[in-house]
Length: 155
Image 1: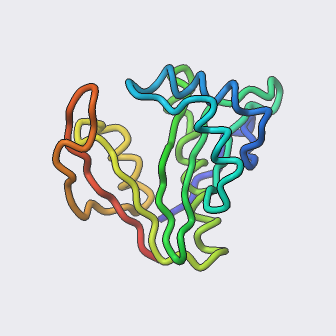
Image 2: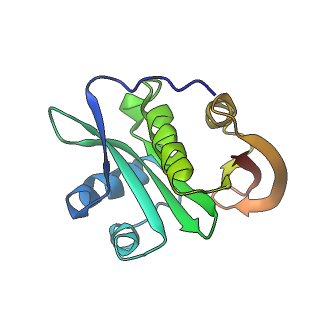
Image 3: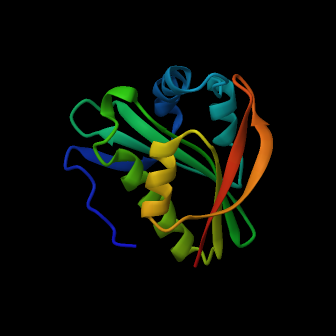
């Protein structure tokens, strides 16, 4: 798992309240059942939540974010979102490596995530950083109904 450098115009920060409007908008652009502003705000109060935002250093606008819940020695990635206009620029990869770095620092033994089985671009990204498929959750997603592939990365 060779870490690539993040784009030079990108900085990654822990999520804070100033990010919430951008993140709620990203969710609406990306998902049929997006997380709301209030749901994202609730994560700021969740002691298990670890969320990072990829921000353009000049505009200070969010290009993407990743969310994870750190439970004991595992991390469950709940969200990874990149603005459609900024995909294929290394944003998602940089966010994944941020969480992987967190996992290593905090003695997490496994990261997990679910992904639509039809989301070939995301699956290729996850596999490129070392995630491996461990199973399928039939009918996990709605709008449209679809199976989820379960991926894990062990340390």
